[in-house]
Length: 625
Image: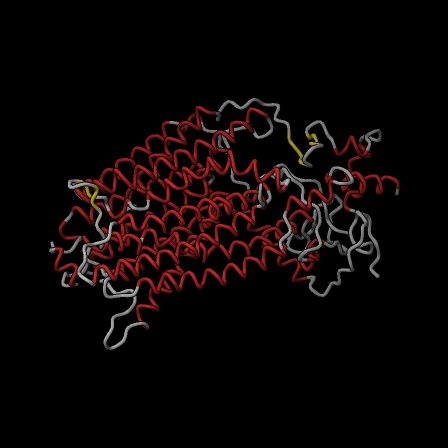
């Protein structure tokens, strides 16, 4: 058995208590600069200096910048599938792959942007540089529609349907991809920093600050929904019926306006200095646990110090971390990283080598990531159905009767508004009526758990693909039998189901990541949500490419041929539904083994406050020793 060493807290108390012998453990733990929040186990740091910047004046400029930026980005891309197939004369599979691959890169980019912002540049300069990159990308894409040298020559609708139009040259395609690349750089910097930068303008240690943060989230998502409605209706209509140059030029002007808005408010912003990325702390846990991989961790006991024969490094929280995590017994391999061995701590209580000794807080943060990752992976398959709204759903709409009356034709890219309307109607009903009713039945604060909400969204994802397959089968039968084209509103059932999928799955995942990640790791949660879409885009692209190559026969084209009247798009939808069934089974297995972070804290709080019981018990033991 290993020799028991003095605890870190005792070492620290030997250094600090000598200068003030009358200071008790409670006095030490609740210093003049620190107060323990007895209700929720959080440490809140008082800010005696009033903030001279930030607040709603600063946030108004941030929201203005965000609104213009989203109007620009979404306005450019809302109808992009139609642009690729009709203006650049790309076939359906190639256009879909461009959309999916670019979407995947764009949704992975926020991980890099978050790292650069947290470790080096800070949020202000990351957003500033990324905004210029987005503007450059939008100008480049607009030029592909404006300059005749950057897009193929004109082509009739009949030639386009027969595949007789000349596609883009390497130069033309290269310019397009260059513009999309700049947009990816811009999105990678703006998306992970916009919400945290807005939150930075409020003081979370005051009631007014916390109220301001909640209001900021409400305004942020309100403007987000309004922007989607505008881009998928007004901007798409301009692109389809007036001019692609004007339709792309308007979002480009909005992007330039967002940059002006952002810098006008610069004197008002509260800037938080970059203090290093948490990715290094995660890597340290993996390395330290590997170096101690031969160390045996005894069976858990009820001792506060841990496993009896071993002591774990558990210092007080630093100023960046507001919520202390208790030690848990899942993924106990990582606990080895926090075990104190000989000659691993300085006299002042700091580890000699951070790559050999990590704190319990660092270990538990890695455990949170390990618990969440399987749930995150299950979201990839369920989001594939939503990805199809921008690709094959638009292709279906192009082959259907989109007229309302005799004079107005619904743009194919606007059909996705049905999903947004579904979300807009359902969420108030769900929040105000259904949740209170479910709360009386389940006694759960949110009516149902977060994992139950995500699971319901997975079911709607499957149903949407089944209905999409049935509608496509009927649409194809009508088209090939010579009957009049089906109304585009036959797509409404699958889009309504996709809307329910978003309302349950997407919003559930956002809330899940924000609640289950530690407070200062929420930027990773937001980046992981973007990565879910990236995974869905790449998976969809792989499926499309494989099916395009293997489903063609000598007498029949492939399922996803350019003329969907000759293909079998319905089979593709059924395949996605089948994958969704296996995904639900995988999700149920992961959900049954998941332990909520809140449940862990609740168990620790049954005795007393998690911070007080852990720190004061160790401190008192050290003093008595």
